[in-house]
Amino acid sequence: MTQFTDLGLGAPILKALADEKYETPTPIQAQSIPLLLKGHDLLGVAQTGTGKTAAFGLPLIQMLSEDTRPLQPKTTRALILSPTRELAQQINDSLKTYSRHVRLRTAVVVGGVSIRSQIRALERGTDILVATPGRLLDLINNRAVRLDELTHFVLDEADQMLDLGFIHDLKRLVKMLPPKRQSLFFSATMPKTIADLASAFLTNPEKVSVAPVASTAEKIDQRVIFTQTPEKMQQLSGLLKGDGVSRAIVFTRTKHGADKVVRDLGRNGIEAAAIHGNKSQGQRQRALGSFKTGNMRVLVATDIAARGIDVDGISHVVNYDLPNVPETYVHRIGRTARAGAEGIAVSICVPEEYIYLRDIERLTSRSLDLMPGADPDTDPRATFSSRNLTAPKRNGGGGNRQGRNGGGGQGRNGGGGQGRNGAPGAGRFADGGRGEGGRGDGGRGEGGRAERPGGGRSKPFRGGAGRSSGRPSGGSSRHGAAD
Image (cartoon, rainbow, N blue to C red):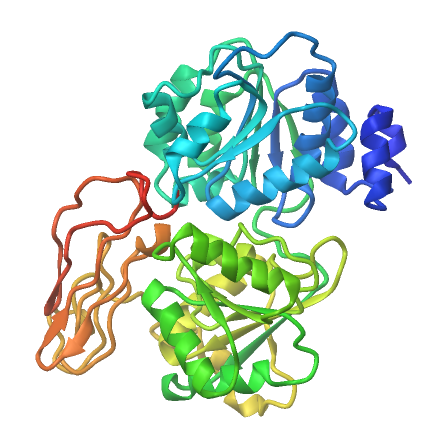
């Protein structure tokens, strides 16, 4: 069996790994590290939780520690781009752990916090800079950082970058990078759009793939609860009060939904905190910190956090709302069963989400197990093939622009349509990926907001009886909440 000592890493890095009791590399690490130490560009495909940070971080630290050139002001030798603030901070923390016995200067820059302190931190130059795209462009525009001395570039979680709308920022940044560099490109999935983006960043890359596209970790026990919408919270509270739930993440589709789940759980005697794009960076860090230390065992999150949370001992992931993009399911449940541990993922499924469950099971090539103790007769999947399972119409319930009694339609660029007496529709771009639907208020719906990161104004969009507000929300960075 391959050990870290077999991969060509230097003594200081091996000592740091020994301090953490790391002996055996994961497949992505065992395959990537020797290639990177030889200077190859790399295209890596691996599901979340497989150890990609060490796969690129360890050789990066070694190569930079061997570079004796003095740092120039405002420059960086290595740039790592991350889609979310939490993931950027997590990468930086890991790099500090791995480089504790070498002299390297690292920094992390993200939106939602003071740019002035970040400008000061970059004045002397850095060996490794971890950044979200929007804040990095802000700093470049402020002439606080230069990329002309860069020798290594890493794009992590590339598919989520595209999901969150960063494609234009990435295209701007690639033009600023020196042509002579080593580039690494990591993604959990590799659709054609991602492959095309990789070709813009990489030169004759080596390819490493350690898991089938969109597969889920083997040690996750995947279950489903079938219920009706009014009983959703009752099912969630009962699950979280059950035996064996030591630490759980609950995923919702919208920011408003996350806050509502926190309030409803509080009424049921379960303390929880929400983490999403409308929270300030301080609020997000406090919630995540309390969750990591165990002071709070339930965290409610939108998909902006699906790949930004790496916390040991997460026993359960709960899909309170099933995602309407099946690949998102893989990223969500990857928060548990990390580093070889076991975990449980539970999806609470209501009739209007049957189509999403069908798509998830098709993507992962497996059927979710019925929750233990549930009546098999309540499982509707046997009739899926004969049901007319179609996605919500674009502009209104029941296929009309305004359904009188049906649920709201699904709007592409903002709030969903609103049925007169029905549930709100879900848009596609909230939380960096979907829009919050309108809420019924008498006869007219209250419009959902377009919340796609990327700044600027979005065009107003009518969804059924409601109107979208047309203004994106976000953090203090001009590039939006996901920054």
